[in-house]
Image 1: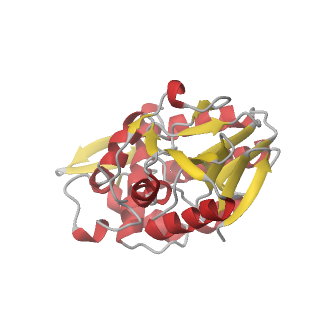
Image 2 (image 1 turned 120 degrees about the vertical axis):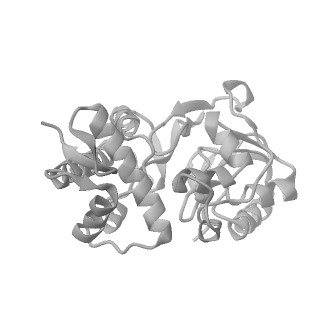
Length: 293
């Protein structure tokens, strides 16, 4: 864990639960792609940098989820590096309380104020093409998060952030967090057609051929959508629908899972509603979901 692996040329990554990209931009200068889950992850990355005699000049955050920005504050304080984040992700990275607030849909209780959902704040600047190192390009990857991006380096290495998960992860957890299902599926279709020397997903193995895994993610996403439509055969309240999904997929609910999967199922319902597959009705002051006729 936290082993430095060379993808190709000057493009490396630290192998950890959410892979951290490291790309050399000079003799000793490097930029990071994400920063790990917390201060401890930041310390381990700093140890890698010190061992290689590298200096981090910038962190490019792919998106604002805590397992990718949790090391921001520590590394910024230690190295004085700049941090860049795309679009709405910048606001969530500067003000991590927005994450728990979004998931809960209101003022979040203390149980949601933890490092898994709410990273430490950091000073962030907008991510634009102008701030990228030579040979870098931004790859928009919306769906899992608001404005998530990946990067292609001069070595033709593509860092894919969280736009897909390993088959093992999908099979274990059944439903992964999504913000926008339609955008996510469009992103996966785009990624399926990408060509690169090597791909580095944050939560799957490095590979030269991303298409099979992208298709597996597409298939499983569509499968969950069909499952939700089936469970709406008769009008059902959201909480009952969510409980049935947990039961059928043999998942165990806790507060964190309730927020993450609950938010995801709402996103599925929005996608299915917009597509005319399900509809909502109100009966006895209750909002119910049912399969569209």
